[in-house]
Length: 213
Ligand code: AMP
Image (cartoon, rainbow, N blue to C red; front, side, top):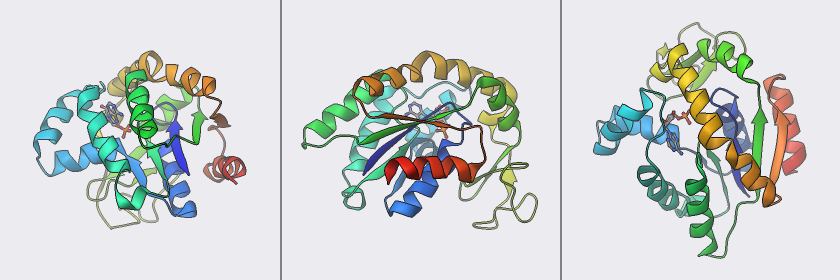
């Protein structure tokens, strides 16, 4: 099962992607996580990506596409995967389709987690991320057992630079300009599924599993 998660930054698609990966036993591939790991490890890719990420801008397509095409070609991804944060532009979607078509493959579902902008800004200010494993939480909607401490690894939680209000506004306008057109793109392919992302996390997940079976 090959799944793409669509939705504005902060719509909760990362949380849902992790739950899908767990339930269906497929890898969760998050380009944001890959970039953050590269930044943490001080790689060349990380250095390049950081300048864009800190401003809420997209990393150029050429830095993302090969990385994803390579990742989905790995052994653990042969039975499927859930892509989170990719594609984010029409050229990225076209590049993925082309790479998959070359091996007689295709995306099965594009799931759009719908949340209006006003909810997003509210949500992002409460989001916290683990400095060690990248796990994300929300102080109100998805709190950790101990405040400020990651449930998964015990790492310290912070408000990511790219979740700060000014950056969030930028990310939203980038989303509307560059990523939202993908809804139409996958709708035309007949694989778009929409779920209401404003309801409780578990309810969103139920709606998704009802689609995936
Ligand atoms: P995310 O964790 O998915 O919200 O991604 C965080 C940031 O990483 C984004 O705001 C972009 O700067 C960058 N990024 C992640 N995925 C992509 C992508 N597919 N294309 C371009 N930039 C990306």
